[in-house]
Image (tube, rainbow, N blue to C red; front, side, top):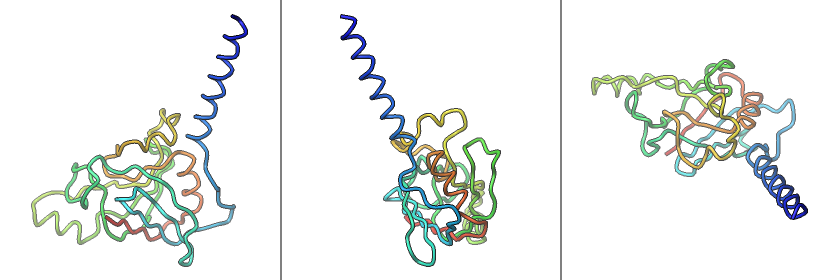
Length: 174
């Protein structure tokens, strides 16, 4: 009986360790000194790809805003914007594990919103998981959960943070 309990404990522990490793592993990390000059987000595919001189270096799976279909039109609509922007700043003290700020809204985004008498919104980021719940790792992608941002695992945003200079172009496609 004790032997069966011990085997069950070992098997359960091994499974838990394997699940944790899967959820927190950064597959195929890029070498130090690598930089990117373009980011492309494909919303429908839930993918963020990074490029250097036209060559795709890596693709990450992402979670988006809770209402992912269509472009962001107004503050609070829970949509991820669509268009061409820049990474214009970064926040190491974010409520989420690291945050790269996207230059949304553009002048055109603001104009379209003003024509409808609404705010276009602001504070769109690429970020990791909310601080304190990073343990969920890759499982955060089971559902779109942000207020319009693009979310990676903590390990992935650490890599993207390191590779992405301010001023990098980001294209967010439908």
